[in-house]
Amino acid sequence: KPCKLDSIESLATALKQGCFSNIVVLIGAGISTAAGIPDFRTPKTGLYDNLDKYSLPYPTAVFDISFFRRDPQPFYKVAKELMPTSPQPTLAHRFLVMLNDRRMLRRIYTQNVDSLELAAGIPQSRLVQAHGSMTRAHCIECHAEHPIEKVREAMKNNQIPVCENCTGVVKPDIVFFGEGLPERFFTLSVNDLRVADLLLIIGTSLVVMPVAGLPEMVDDQVPRVLMNKEPSGDIGERPNDLLLLGDCQETISRLSALCGWQDEIQRQKL
Ligand code: OAD
Image (tube, rainbow, N blue to C red; front, side):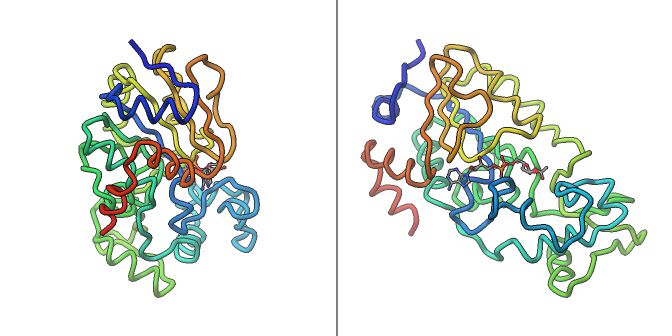
C-alpha cells in the first residue's frame, strides 16, 4: 500500500520506517548548481541566458547536432568557459548514496552529464545517464572512439578535436538535440517506473522529452516528490504529489536532519 506523504516530516518518517524499497530518482541541472555548474533555464544565471557572444541562431543550437556539424566552435567555447574543471558532488548527491546504502534506491535517471552521481559513489548499475556523459568521446563521422583527455587538451588550447582516421569532428558522448538517448534509458525506464514506490524529482524544469515524460509513467497512487526552486511539469496535480519548493540542498539538509542521517552524510564526505 503506497505511503501517504503530505509534508517533509511525513517523508522523513516514511524513509526512516522503511516504507520504500524501489525509489526512482529523476534529477536535472538544479542538483549540480551548488557544485558551480550553471543550469540551463534559470533567467540570468542559466546557460541559455549567457550565450549572446556566441552569435547562435537560438540558444539550444549550442547542443544541436545539425548545428554542431556546421559549426562545432560554439559548443567547445561554451564547454570550456562555463564548466568548472573538477566539480565535487553536492549534499543532495550524497543523500542519494544514503538511499542506495539503505537498499531503497531502484534507479537514478539523470539528465546531467557531469557524472557527479558516480563521483559521489552511486554504482553505475543504479544510474541511467539519459543525456550521456563527458567521460567518453567519439568521431561524429566514422564513430571511432577517442580518449576524452585528447578532447580536454584540445579544448584547453582552443582547438576543435578532430579524428585522426577521417578528420571528422570529435564530440563528447553527450546527447544533443536531434540525437537518440542511450538504449539503456528505454530498456530500463518502463519497468522501473512501473515498480517505483516513490518518485523523487530534484532540480529539473521537466521540459525536455523523453525524460520529462517519466513522471507520468508512475501509477496514480505512487507519491511523487518535487524538490525544486519552482514548480515543474504536472507535479502537484495528483493527490499524492508533494512539492518541496526552494533550494534543493537546503531541503535535503532539512530532510537528512529529520531522518537523523546528518552525521552519516558528513562522514561520507571524508
Ligand atoms: P533546467 O535549467 O531546465 O532546469 C533546472 C531547474 O532546477 C529549474 O527549474 C531551476 O529553478 C531549478 N534549480 C536550479 N538551481 C536549484 C537549486 N539549487 N535548488 C532547487 N532547484 C534549483 O535544467 P534541466 O531540467 O536539467 O539537455 O534541463 C534538461 C535538459 O535541457 C538538459 O539535460 C539539457 C538541456 O537542454 C541537453 O542538452 C540535451
